[in-house]
Image (cartoon, rainbow, N blue to C red; front, side, top):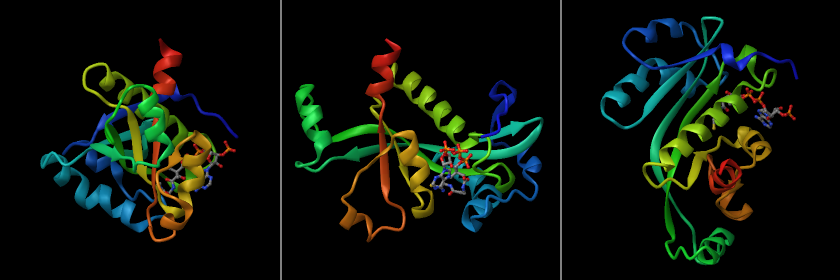
Length: 183
Ligand SMILES: CC(C)(COP(=O)(O)OP(=O)(O)OC[C@H]1O[C@@H](n2cnc3c(N)ncnc32)[C@H](O)[C@@H]1OP(=O)(O)O)[C@@H](O)C(=O)NCCC(=O)NCCS
Protein backbone atom coordinates (compact mmCIF):
# COMPACT_ATOMS: atom_id res chain seq x y z
CA UNK A 1 0.00 0.00 0.00
CA UNK A 2 1.36 3.47 -0.95
CA UNK A 3 1.60 5.92 1.90
CA UNK A 4 0.59 9.49 2.50
CA UNK A 5 1.42 11.62 5.50
CA UNK A 6 -1.82 11.89 7.45
CA UNK A 7 -0.39 14.87 9.34
CA UNK A 8 -0.97 16.74 6.09
CA UNK A 9 -4.70 16.03 6.15
CA UNK A 10 -6.88 18.94 7.13
CA UNK A 11 -10.32 18.26 8.59
CA UNK A 12 -13.08 20.84 8.30
CA UNK A 13 -16.74 20.80 9.26
CA UNK A 14 -18.91 21.26 6.16
CA UNK A 15 -19.99 24.89 5.77
CA UNK A 16 -21.49 27.36 3.29
CA UNK A 17 -17.92 28.36 2.38
CA UNK A 18 -16.10 25.03 1.95
CA UNK A 19 -19.00 23.27 0.16
CA UNK A 20 -17.71 25.10 -2.95
CA UNK A 21 -14.48 23.04 -2.83
CA UNK A 22 -16.34 19.75 -3.22
CA UNK A 23 -16.57 20.17 -6.99
CA UNK A 24 -17.25 16.98 -8.91
CA UNK A 25 -16.42 14.57 -6.06
CA UNK A 26 -16.87 10.96 -7.15
CA UNK A 27 -16.61 7.97 -4.79
CA UNK A 28 -18.32 5.62 -7.24
CA UNK A 29 -21.57 5.51 -5.27
CA UNK A 30 -24.20 7.93 -6.67
CA UNK A 31 -26.18 8.41 -3.44
CA UNK A 32 -22.99 9.24 -1.49
CA UNK A 33 -21.95 11.69 -4.23
CA UNK A 34 -25.31 13.46 -4.21
CA UNK A 35 -25.63 13.44 -0.40
CA UNK A 36 -22.59 15.64 0.12
CA UNK A 37 -23.67 18.15 -2.53
CA UNK A 38 -27.46 18.20 -2.04
CA UNK A 39 -28.36 17.07 1.49
CA UNK A 40 -25.48 17.18 3.99
CA UNK A 41 -25.54 20.89 4.83
CA UNK A 42 -29.30 20.98 5.20
CA UNK A 43 -29.25 17.94 7.51
CA UNK A 44 -26.48 19.60 9.50
CA UNK A 45 -28.59 22.75 9.98
CA UNK A 46 -31.39 20.48 11.23
CA UNK A 47 -28.98 18.93 13.80
CA UNK A 48 -29.51 15.49 12.22
CA UNK A 49 -25.78 14.92 11.73
CA UNK A 50 -22.43 16.66 11.14
CA UNK A 51 -20.29 16.18 8.05
CA UNK A 52 -16.50 16.42 8.15
CA UNK A 53 -14.47 17.10 5.02
CA UNK A 54 -10.95 15.73 4.60
CA UNK A 55 -8.49 17.73 2.49
CA UNK A 56 -5.10 16.41 1.37
CA UNK A 57 -2.65 18.81 -0.25
CA UNK A 58 -5.48 21.34 -0.16
CA UNK A 59 -7.78 19.13 -2.23
CA UNK A 60 -11.07 17.67 -0.97
CA UNK A 61 -10.66 13.88 -1.00
CA UNK A 62 -13.13 12.33 1.45
CA UNK A 63 -15.92 12.96 3.91
CA UNK A 64 -17.65 11.31 6.80
CA UNK A 65 -20.93 12.15 8.48
CA UNK A 66 -21.43 11.48 12.18
CA UNK A 67 -24.48 11.30 14.43
CA UNK A 68 -25.41 10.03 17.87
CA UNK A 69 -26.69 6.46 17.96
CA UNK A 70 -27.55 3.58 20.26
CA UNK A 71 -27.19 -0.14 19.78
CA UNK A 72 -29.44 -2.87 21.17
CA UNK A 73 -28.25 -6.42 21.74
CA UNK A 74 -30.69 -9.31 21.88
CA UNK A 75 -30.54 -11.48 25.03
CA UNK A 76 -28.58 -14.26 23.35
CA UNK A 77 -26.06 -11.90 21.71
CA UNK A 78 -22.44 -12.54 22.77
CA UNK A 79 -21.96 -8.84 23.51
CA UNK A 80 -24.81 -8.95 26.05
CA UNK A 81 -22.94 -11.69 27.91
CA UNK A 82 -19.76 -9.59 27.89
CA UNK A 83 -21.67 -6.60 29.27
CA UNK A 84 -23.25 -8.73 32.01
CA UNK A 85 -19.76 -9.92 33.01
CA UNK A 86 -18.88 -6.23 33.46
CA UNK A 87 -22.00 -5.77 35.60
CA UNK A 88 -23.88 -3.84 32.88
CA UNK A 89 -27.46 -5.07 32.67
CA UNK A 90 -28.61 -2.78 29.84
CA UNK A 91 -29.47 -4.17 26.41
CA UNK A 92 -29.18 -0.76 24.74
CA UNK A 93 -25.89 1.12 24.88
CA UNK A 94 -24.81 4.55 23.58
CA UNK A 95 -22.83 4.83 20.38
CA UNK A 96 -21.43 7.21 17.78
CA UNK A 97 -22.62 6.44 14.26
CA UNK A 98 -20.69 6.76 11.02
CA UNK A 99 -23.74 7.74 9.01
CA UNK A 100 -21.82 8.23 5.74
CA UNK A 101 -18.24 7.60 4.67
CA UNK A 102 -16.79 8.18 1.23
CA UNK A 103 -13.30 8.43 -0.22
CA UNK A 104 -12.83 9.74 -3.78
CA UNK A 105 -12.33 6.98 -6.34
CA UNK A 106 -8.74 7.90 -7.17
CA UNK A 107 -7.70 7.39 -3.51
CA UNK A 108 -9.68 4.24 -2.73
CA UNK A 109 -7.77 1.17 -1.52
CA UNK A 110 -4.40 2.84 -2.11
CA UNK A 111 -3.36 4.89 0.88
CA UNK A 112 -5.38 3.72 3.89
CA UNK A 113 -7.45 6.89 3.65
CA UNK A 114 -10.69 5.27 4.86
CA UNK A 115 -8.84 3.52 7.69
CA UNK A 116 -7.31 6.82 8.77
CA UNK A 117 -10.77 8.40 8.89
CA UNK A 118 -12.10 5.55 11.02
CA UNK A 119 -9.16 5.92 13.41
CA UNK A 120 -9.91 9.65 13.60
CA UNK A 121 -13.56 8.79 14.42
CA UNK A 122 -12.40 6.36 17.13
CA UNK A 123 -10.28 9.14 18.66
CA UNK A 124 -13.26 11.49 18.67
CA UNK A 125 -15.55 8.82 20.13
CA UNK A 126 -13.06 8.17 22.94
CA UNK A 127 -12.88 11.87 23.72
CA UNK A 128 -16.68 11.95 23.75
CA UNK A 129 -16.76 8.95 26.08
CA UNK A 130 -14.77 10.96 28.64
CA UNK A 131 -17.69 13.42 28.85
CA UNK A 132 -20.80 11.47 27.78
CA UNK A 133 -21.26 7.69 27.79
CA UNK A 134 -20.26 6.27 24.41
CA UNK A 135 -19.37 2.60 24.23
CA UNK A 136 -19.49 1.76 20.52
CA UNK A 137 -18.89 3.14 17.04
CA UNK A 138 -21.57 1.91 14.65
CA UNK A 139 -22.12 1.94 10.89
CA UNK A 140 -24.63 0.55 8.43
CA UNK A 141 -22.15 -0.97 6.02
CA UNK A 142 -22.78 -1.04 2.31
CA UNK A 143 -22.75 -4.72 1.36
CA UNK A 144 -19.77 -4.19 -1.01
CA UNK A 145 -17.82 -2.37 1.70
CA UNK A 146 -18.35 -4.71 4.62
CA UNK A 147 -14.89 -6.24 4.06
CA UNK A 148 -13.40 -2.83 4.83
CA UNK A 149 -15.11 -2.72 8.24
CA UNK A 150 -14.19 -6.38 8.89
CA UNK A 151 -10.49 -5.56 8.35
CA UNK A 152 -10.63 -2.79 10.94
CA UNK A 153 -12.23 -5.10 13.51
CA UNK A 154 -15.90 -4.13 13.42
CA UNK A 155 -18.29 -6.93 14.40
CA UNK A 156 -21.59 -7.81 12.76
CA UNK A 157 -24.72 -7.10 14.81
CA UNK A 158 -26.92 -9.59 12.97
CA UNK A 159 -26.63 -13.27 12.10
CA UNK A 160 -25.66 -14.26 8.54
CA UNK A 161 -29.28 -15.15 7.84
CA UNK A 162 -30.63 -11.81 9.11
CA UNK A 163 -27.94 -9.91 7.18
CA UNK A 164 -29.12 -11.38 3.89
CA UNK A 165 -32.35 -9.39 4.27
CA UNK A 166 -30.49 -6.09 4.76
CA UNK A 167 -28.95 -3.88 2.08
CA UNK A 168 -26.86 -2.16 4.76
CA UNK A 169 -25.92 -4.67 7.49
CA UNK A 170 -25.20 -2.95 10.82
CA UNK A 171 -21.68 -3.29 12.24
CA UNK A 172 -20.16 -2.06 15.49
CA UNK A 173 -16.79 -1.53 17.14
CA UNK A 174 -16.36 -1.81 20.92
CA UNK A 175 -14.42 1.22 22.19
CA UNK A 176 -13.57 -0.51 25.48
CA UNK A 177 -10.69 -2.25 23.64
CA UNK A 178 -9.12 1.12 22.78
CA UNK A 179 -10.00 2.65 26.13
CA UNK A 180 -8.17 -0.11 28.01
CA UNK A 181 -5.08 0.13 25.80
CA UNK A 182 -5.04 3.94 26.24
CA UNK A 183 -5.31 3.90 30.07
C1 LIG B 1 -15.08 1.87 1.66
C2 LIG B 1 -14.08 3.02 1.69
C3 LIG B 1 -14.54 4.12 2.64
C4 LIG B 1 -12.73 2.46 2.19
O1 LIG B 1 -11.76 3.49 2.20
P1 LIG B 1 -10.35 3.23 1.45
O2 LIG B 1 -9.49 4.41 1.66
O3 LIG B 1 -10.64 2.85 0.04
O4 LIG B 1 -9.82 1.96 2.23
P2 LIG B 1 -8.36 1.68 2.88
O5 LIG B 1 -7.32 2.05 1.87
O6 LIG B 1 -8.27 2.34 4.21
O7 LIG B 1 -8.45 0.11 3.02
C5 LIG B 1 -8.11 -0.59 4.20
C6 LIG B 1 -8.20 -2.07 3.89
O8 LIG B 1 -9.57 -2.40 3.60
C7 LIG B 1 -9.64 -2.98 2.29
N1 LIG B 1 -10.86 -2.51 1.65
C8 LIG B 1 -11.17 -1.26 1.29
N2 LIG B 1 -12.36 -1.22 0.71
C9 LIG B 1 -12.82 -2.50 0.72
C10 LIG B 1 -14.01 -3.12 0.25
N3 LIG B 1 -14.97 -2.40 -0.35
N4 LIG B 1 -14.15 -4.46 0.42
C11 LIG B 1 -13.18 -5.19 1.02
N5 LIG B 1 -12.02 -4.65 1.48
C12 LIG B 1 -11.86 -3.32 1.33
C13 LIG B 1 -8.40 -2.47 1.55
O9 LIG B 1 -8.05 -3.31 0.50
C14 LIG B 1 -7.38 -2.46 2.66
O10 LIG B 1 -6.91 -3.78 2.88
P3 LIG B 1 -5.33 -4.08 3.14
O11 LIG B 1 -5.03 -3.39 4.44
O12 LIG B 1 -5.27 -5.55 3.22
O13 LIG B 1 -4.60 -3.49 1.99
C15 LIG B 1 -13.86 3.63 0.28
O14 LIG B 1 -13.33 2.64 -0.58
C16 LIG B 1 -15.12 4.23 -0.34
O15 LIG B 1 -15.40 5.38 -0.15
N6 LIG B 1 -15.87 3.39 -1.10
C17 LIG B 1 -17.07 3.87 -1.80
C18 LIG B 1 -18.14 4.34 -0.86
C19 LIG B 1 -18.42 3.34 0.25
O16 LIG B 1 -18.58 2.16 0.01
N7 LIG B 1 -18.50 3.85 1.48
C20 LIG B 1 -18.77 3.06 2.66
C21 LIG B 1 -20.21 3.19 2.95
S1 LIG B 1 -20.68 2.16 4.27
